[in-house]
Length: 146
Length: 215
Image 1 (cartoon, one colour):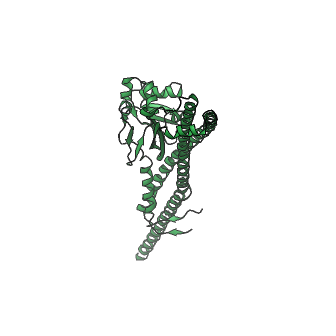
Image 2 (cartoon, rainbow over the protein chains, first blue to last red):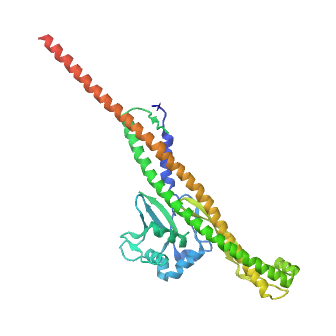
Image 3 (cartoon, helix red, strand yellow):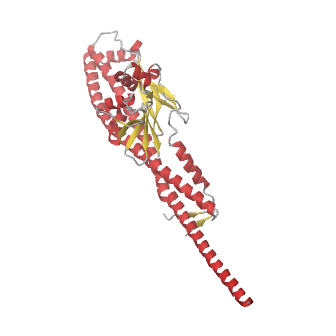
């Protein structure tokens, strides 16, 4: 069996950078829907320095299904938490009291069925993800967690 | 591929470090697998949308050519050409990036120019020409949509290949390599412990013998 006596720090560094880069596309700060509707080119800055643009059609669609108060409450992009080894995903909401949130209302409208609530947000399943991403391409983003 | 034992120093600190690295590699592999499944899902979704857009494109172009040939037949080629030459572009195209699981994809958005939203036909207010113009605008809109989807497909495909390679490297090289090195070091330390016990027993025997001769 060959034995190498060299350092494999390169691999360690590579592994560490892989873990930090996987969620680098997350926004620095989210904006409310009402704020984005007033921008000419609605966009946010990401942690890696890049920019993420929103489709105006999507924002208008969201605005059409929400009231004025809810537009102030909805933070975009909505973050879909992909949890390792689980078939369901979580969309965290500001209000963590288990009551119906703005996000739940949006998903219920998009999916055409009531969204299942968790204490910290809205739970969605992989089978529902396609339909949701199709309708909300730029207003949702993924985050990978363990 | 045979996993290689990579060890800088055969010490217990090194063993602890390798175990930590193995745990990290396994965590990263889990996340990478999740990312891969999401990217594949996005890719398949884009393929479906692209197929739909292609069908729409064919239909719209068919209708547009039909309308154009009718216009040319009714008004004559020279008049249609003249009208098209003076027609204003009633929209602009805005290109911007969007992020999908770490991949930057382009987004093209057609923005209507309200001041020039209608093409003006000074020669004759023809419904045929207007219809042709509308169809041409639809053609452009679907073409832009298809261009966005096609470029997204290419970028997602490239990223899937990249992530697959990383996953394979972790699964077949890094993790087995760390695993076998940890096993090698553990066995080496166990062997050292056994040798130490045997040595101590031998020393004890020697001391006992020496004490027996002393009496």
